[in-house]
Length: 93
Length: 93
Image 1: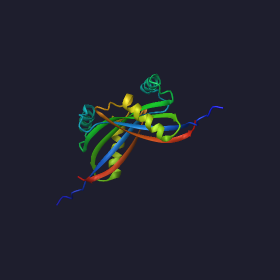
Image 2: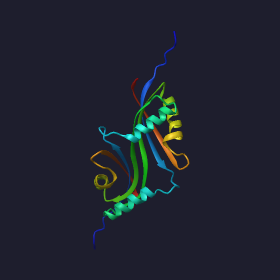
Image 3: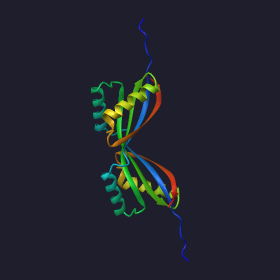
Image 4: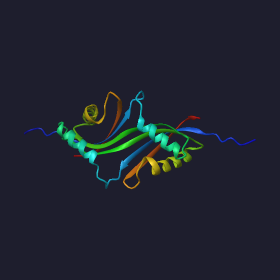
């Protein structure tokens, strides 16, 4: 009998932000827009991506490992962006 | 003598996500891309925005109030998007 490995469903939140040394023209535009609208007290606007996804894996550590790869390969550009991953247990898949 | 109102510096994180009923073509494309790359265990990819900013305000409640307005008016499209705001105290401005 083949051994069935149990997999679990995980929810993940990925935050992709520009590295601090990289200029953020979109953030600057938003800041200028806000200033134009009268919100002069706002500064340092930085715009990033927020990605929610679900994945199945045998353990939380493996899910985290795979998400690291996914971020490096697709979700983020490691040259100019940082990313942060949060993994939550959802249920038995 | 005029009364000087003390202002504080707050850091805020804003998460803008598509409402669950709204289709997310970018998320679907990412999911298809991941599947193409061999990550068949990933599902339900939703892509949103993550905005970091700093603002000065007289209290955390006022900062939160202003951020609500800013989200409704500029950062999010309330028709198709939800937003969540986190405010942190930074320092005396």
